[in-house]
Length: 314
Image 1 (cartoon, rainbow, N blue to C red):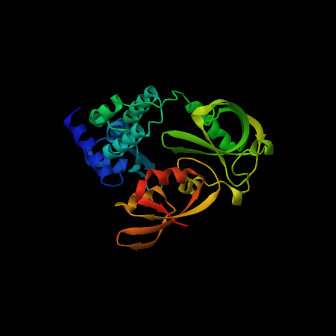
Image 2: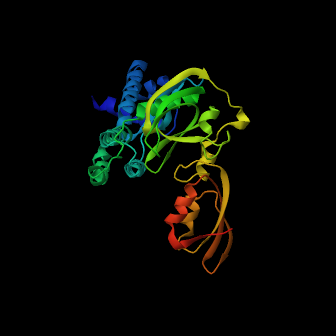
Image 3: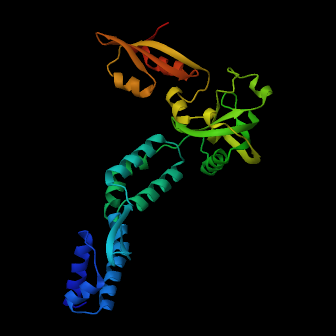
């Protein structure tokens, strides 16, 4: 490449990066070349920007505006995550312990490869290497990602699911036909929340009420079939997993209730973060009276885990 072409390419590139419109005729006159030379320069710049996106994470596109008879630069979107963002995601994934070791390592490698500029990938890998090496996979040792995807498709299409499920309480395998409404994650496991139409099955439930979903651990689903049969839930009656998630502890279902307790610990925010519906009713000398709306019996497990810092009130 001769110095004349270098000067032209850098000049046009600088104009584009500065937000100016580049007109081929004007540039040809300025550099004393024909318009075909300017077009080749613009093509070279376009090719460079496409290849540079792999390293910078920014996709810049040179667009021709017919009305203004010129080229301008359009930044489409940020392709890559920042180093801090990808590090946070990797740490959260490792702490979740949700996947088998092989699956977790494969997922981390893909995330770093796809979302981190090449020059920073080694740094991110080094920051998670020790935790990844000592990663402890869940004891169920089950690959369930494909099953979870099938569940997601059934939820999206409002279609019934037929499944064989290994119950937690006695490890018995039972058959269920359910209306799936949400996939949720909590304490190492992914869960399916669904409604059961079968009255006979629901006879043994602690809460017999269609407004409360049943919760299934997805890794305990032994077989699954998405049926052609569909169901309809009116919009105003739809299940809102975000609101449900605020009120459920350890993914134990059950009726909606209010709890009231006195907290004497040192970290009030930890309590409010754990119970998103919690409201501080009163505070005196470091003692807090708190009320929260929750689903099911999981709240009892959590209260016991807090020892003498919490006293349940009537």
